[in-house]
Image (cartoon, rainbow, N blue to C red; front, side, top):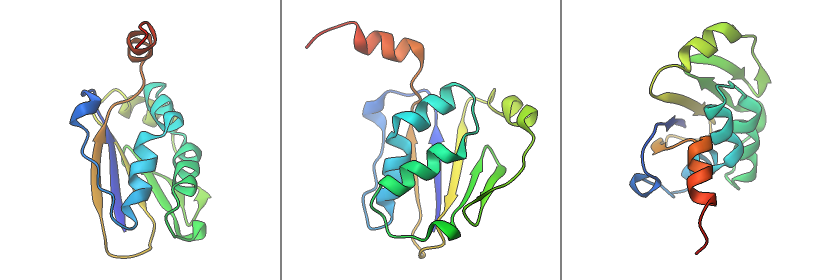
Length: 130
């Protein structure tokens, strides 16, 4: 399964959600607060993505998981891959951040768009009471 998680600045209401079978994993990964804050902080932290996948309830073997962040391989076969941190920081300056996950668990694929958690987002949504 080749899944792409993209984080872009857009209202959460425009997020498209796919909830079929393995696609539960992509939903959990892009909605996870730790993943969103890593994206905002320009941190190519594949462990946060892997943890969100693990919490998703999707069936897969962690030893099979490959993760790329911004086109940089950061995890292969469930293990860390050395990557250039400076190159990752440079790529985080792009307006879109692509996180690609291959679970090697079937033929399905999905793409989901979401936004990160910026200071401004948290301030706006934390400043009022409903």
